Image (cartoon, rainbow, N blue to C red):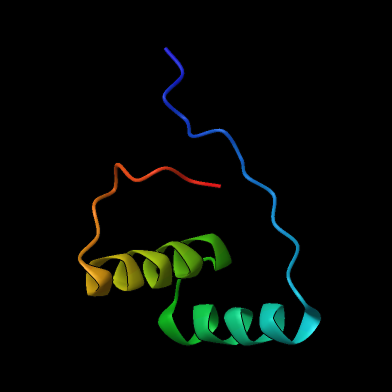
Length: 55
């Protein structure tokens, strides 16, 4: 049974990628985990349902 999430590609400007990389190092996590953490934090702030349609 394969329970891995399929990868999603996004293009990031170099300055944003660098900033995220520094944040990830400071927090002792991977770049992916840092991005997920930021996105979940923002999602919770908005109080929006996770069942909304995505573009």
